[in-house]
Amino acid sequence: MFQLLWILLIGFVLGVLAKLLLRGPQAIPWWLTMLLGAGGALLGNAAAGWIGVRHTGGIDWIRHLLQLGFAVGLVALVAPAYSKSRAGR
Image (cartoon, rainbow, N blue to C red; front, side):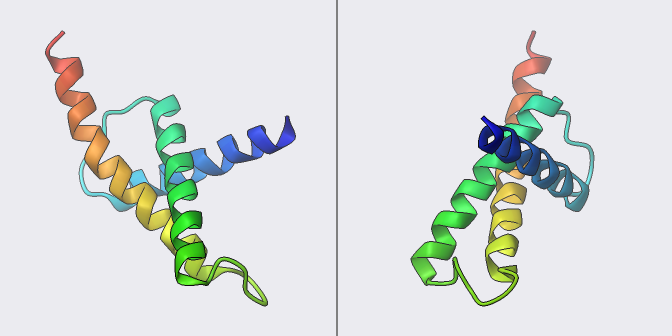
C-alpha cells in the first residue's frame, strides 16, 4: 500500500516538474499530471535498466534525469491532446 502511495507522490512531483520545464500553460488536471509523472518514472526506470545505469554506487542521477525526461515528453504529448478534447465539449 505504501509503495503505491510513494509511486503516486513521485509521479506528482515529476509531473509538476515537467509542467514547470515546459513553455506555456498545460491545462491538465492534477490527477493526469500525477499519472503522466508516474508513467515517466516507469519509462525512465526501464530505459535506465536497458542502458545499464539503473543501480549505481550513489545517487542514480542518470536514472532520475531519464525519468524527468520521459515525464516532460509525456506531458508535452498529452497536454495539447487533452486540451483539444476538453475544448470540443
